[in-house]
Length: 256
Picture (spheres, rainbow, N blue to C red):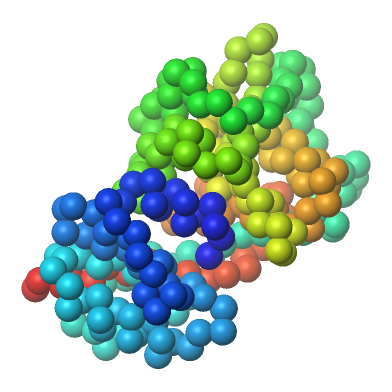
């Protein structure tokens, strides 16, 4: 699991710990705990043992994010199954030739006519909060997504990594993507997009993100999960994103 996601989780938890130095666990004061069971080289039995130990703690609910489903546990419910999508930068045609790029070409021509341009920034301002609040009011997210979005100001204030790729129209900011970097694997991560208007701002920013990744030597752009939203899945696939990591999001009612 990428470091940027762990940072965002830690922003909204009261306590962060590691089980056996492998699996991050996040506790809040409302009796909930979140555990991330992605760890290279670890077998399912390691994750199961982690869950078995965590349910002994004084918590009411355990939320589990894992590459495998945990079956056979009492009171466990699968909330959704998703994929983490990645775009291969080297295989993307930045000249946008061919019928498969038709929709992208159309959106980018719209963006050009509207005079959009980008800036890189790390300072989260009241203007970003305004766009964020309108974005959240327009969409229905999982509670974890709300928590991550609400932690953005603190994230940029307390960490020295990550950027915002902002889009402007007539000198006014109208949207931004959060981007971060996973240097060991030359991956640029684009986990969150926040817009006043979805199209063509989202397409314009995606193209700018891919150009930035190419110019800075990143081989992959991680565009995150679909959150169970069909339209978001279609958007990622339009940009040739491929499902790379399967993940299961389950909730275990500890006190039942």
